[in-house]
Image 1 (cartoon, rainbow, N blue to C red):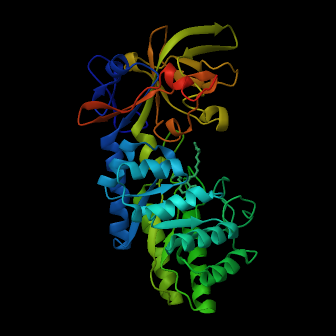
Image 2 (cartoon, rainbow, N blue to C red):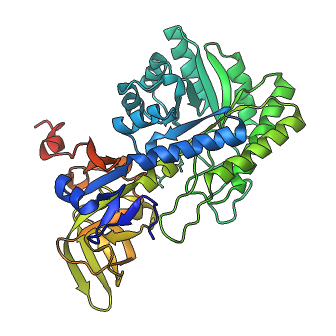
Image 3 (cartoon, protein in one colour):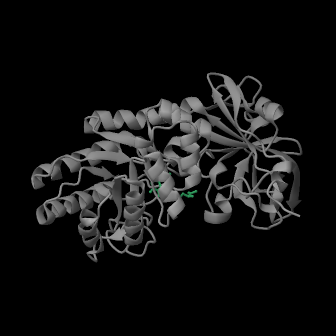
Length: 433
Ligand code: LLP
């Protein structure tokens, strides 16, 4: 009935998440409110881990892409689940470190890491720094030398696969700000260079072909391209690349139009291809890493809002105004992303209306969505936007000086605050007058 399996309707006709009445959560913690279901987050982690165990003999590591949703509680959950972490800034790295996250399981990404970020990563002993370009390689070599350390690196490679088009295309993705291109020989030259530089050890290669992908084939093709490159490096440079990081990007169900592939199937097909090719090319099987972000966090989250009013513009549309908006969920404004919505206090009623849900920011484009089927709503109703666990809190802003909502975690029928609601003092905290 709902896009995420942790949602249901109770005997009062109220939407529940992880068995808890969402209208009670709204009452207790206020709105707007992000609610994350810890049990589902953990279940998602386990299904990725299990699929690597099952199909790749456990020779791999799942690294949660923390850009999807990062806070101390989330890092702690990942740590407890034995999952690694993909971080892309010193902020994410610091959050991980502040809960004592094992740094050997951290992958540090970014196309323009600062010296400060690289130094912090070296100091923390981050397991794998994903080097994006030659400037970074040289800076990292120097900084590691100064620190008297040797750092493990992976190279970010553009495998030349665009998975975002309806029919994915094989080449033509040289135009990306991320990584080294294969086709031009840039990646091969960079490998040679890494082998010459002291204080860095090239442990692996990385690629990431996009996000919210529903096809398995582009992932399999990416794995094929990467193994072929690993074989070329072995043949021509006599160097064995030990690890292969295949990135994230697994699609999730936002609305009934989305049909995600089971993770198992993805891992099965990729494993078969990797094993087959390695055998054929006589290359040792690499240790595999994957970096799911959205697929771990998004289905576990919802956002609750209170309706402030309903404006019906005859023959045009009905605006339902909520107490949040693009400041807590910029995805419609940015990508025209679609979501399912439910009137949480009327969840058993039929969805008889089609509305535009508008935020409270001073901007016409501040919408949560248009043409959204929903129950008949009025002032004071609670609206739940579903599958908002990824790239909502993490992409929120203080536009219009609106404080960020709290994040509440639910687990085993209990709720707790994971991130406190910002207050007005927080808004002026860094101002100097
Ligand atoms: N690894 C790398 C190197 C990435 O760049 C990303 C996402 C991931 C892993 C995780 O991808 P996922 O499994 O979450 O699809 N803000 C956009 C999504 C941007 C994704 C950026 N990179 C959105 O709201 O849809």
